[in-house]
Amino acid sequence: MSSKQRAVSNSKKHCWLFTPRNPLRYRSNRRQAGFTLLELVVAITLMGLVLVVLYSGLRLGLNGWDSGEQRAEATNRLRLAQEFLRRQLMQSLTVYAINEEQKRVVAFVGQPDRIEFVAPMLAQLGRGGLYRVRVEANDNRLWIRWRPYLPADPEAGEERETVLLEDVSSVEWAYFGPEQESQLESPPRWHSNWMNAQRRPQLVRLNLHLRGQPWPDLVAALTEGSAGATGFGP
Image 1 (cartoon, rainbow, N blue to C red):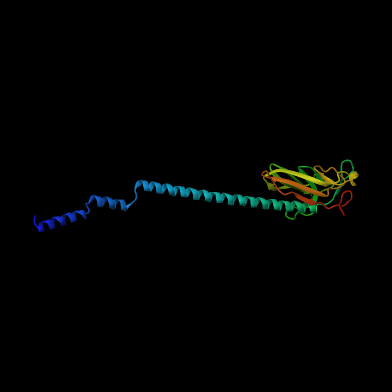
Image 2 (cartoon, rainbow, N blue to C red):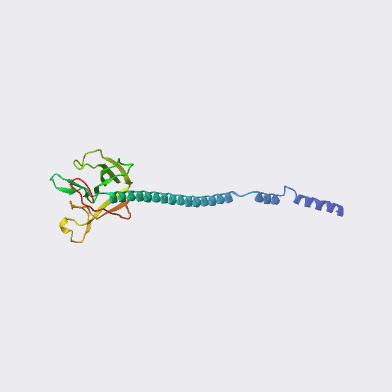
């Protein structure tokens, strides 16, 4: 074979190596063109795990935000209710009336689950004057009920009511002072029932549980005074 023929033969061999039909080079180009199915499955799995973690964190944050708002709202409602009750108790008056036995008794009832007293109401709730106010809990609510105070007939007049607090688990009232007139010289103490028909307690305490959680006690001082048979005064 002459040198010219050998040069032509070598050039054909080199041309064949660089043609697109070279299987080695074709497989290499396919591998560089995209991902395999296994790689796509692994990528999608990792992306799903990342999304699950992000969603869990977002949900946890939203739940914490909601619970914080509910707690703040409950605290605000309790604060407003306590301020209202404290104001009503501190504005309450020592009023005397004549009972069925024709004896002069103070218009006040103190029991563990309810309290009843005479006080002026807020302008938006009443029409002025004195009202017989009763605060008690039932149906998991703290209610306040009031009617105009008429010494001759305590049950006269239309009784109105409104809810002070929701989700009330338990209510306990307590009363501080001498239990009987004969015990004025003895140190006063707390009582679950107020039995003294001649004077009101010095202090009133409300222990409240909302949704099973205890809240700070409400303590209010009652003004002391003497009054006539059907009136009030200093």
